[in-house]
Length: 314
Image (cartoon, rainbow, N blue to C red; front, side, top):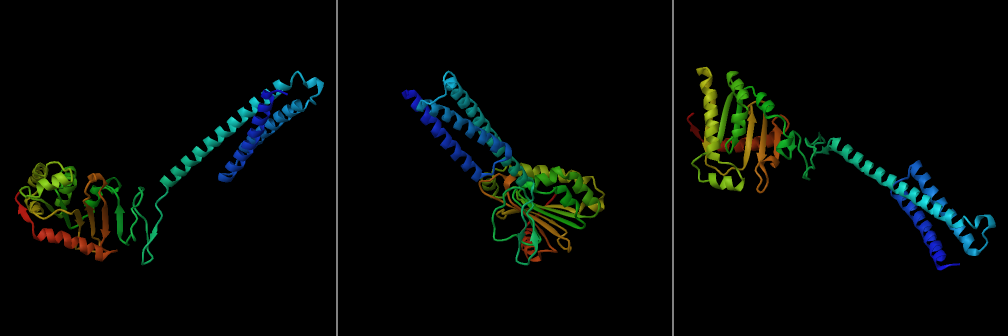
């Protein structure tokens, strides 16, 4: 009996114990399917046979006809067993990755779980992004954690029947990218009021620096030019429906209010966030008919600015 033979025997014995442990451990973490179980036990049997042949040789009781082949048979079984175990581990790993991918896809495609508010009304968050945990989501309030989640602005504006009120730094996006909708609303008799930060306000530079905003003054000029072009193309009886106003108060949010005097009024409020891209600013959309209290708070905030604003000639 050689030292090498002793070493081989102990290594194979340890391999069997490790394999059994590996099998039990994986079985507990996630049930094995039929193919994994077949591969695992095939590996176990091959290793047991290889150790058995080695043990027979070690004890010196190997049948005469097997003596020339014992070592080769042992090596062959060890090799095949190793391949079987490699296949088992590879399949196991691939299956785990596939299941994780499936779980992730499943989670991504499932709508967020509804939350229960105090009244018992089920409210479903309007986002596939992780929801910031709050004490509750209120009835009549749609929550959007970024601009990418917002429904179409054109659709919101287009739903107006009598009035549209807007408040923001410059409202450049609304004024320049929704010109057709604005013209259509004005022609149908809808009053539209823009309130922007006064270009001469001492707050302009601090706001630009705090929110990495492009030149507000230039943006307002572009909006004024665009609105003036829209207004000049309207019949005279519709021109006074469009007005742009300026204010000199500290900006805290963007507001779009649709038909605030109507029972079907909607107000969209986007809060400014320091250190965050404007694309990730949080927005609430409140329906007057379902949450009058919160709607009134935001509408009063808008009217506070409106009452202190000045008409800008266009």
